[in-house]
Image 1 (cartoon, one colour):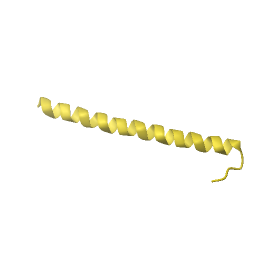
Image 2 (image 1 turned 30 degrees about the horizontal axis):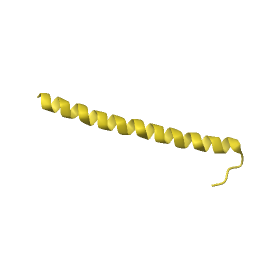
Image 3 (image 1 turned 120 degrees about the vertical axis):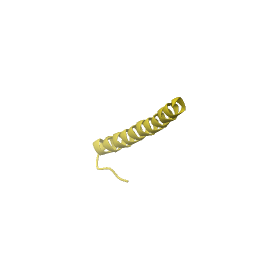
Length: 44
């Protein structure tokens, strides 16, 4: 992938970072949600 200028390169890096960050949060929420669900079921 070639970039016209530094700004585009930085923008691409930032978007990758944001993607990884948001996916990490999403994974965490899913795992956390599953654990909460299990705890609730065990209490019943």
